[in-house]
Length: 70
Image (cartoon, rainbow, N blue to C red):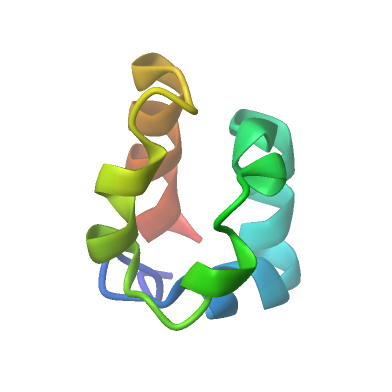
């Protein structure tokens, strides 16, 4: 538990089955973001500004709250 945080890269989050499932379940909109592949090397905290407007704030909040519990 606790191995994932906003310091984790987008690529790791996409490539790890547990975090990928969380994305799919909570905020699948992320997966269709046009800059997703370009942002794979970004830490999540650095990618968050690019997600504003693309993902509803309540879903993003739920994702961020669940992430450290994986």
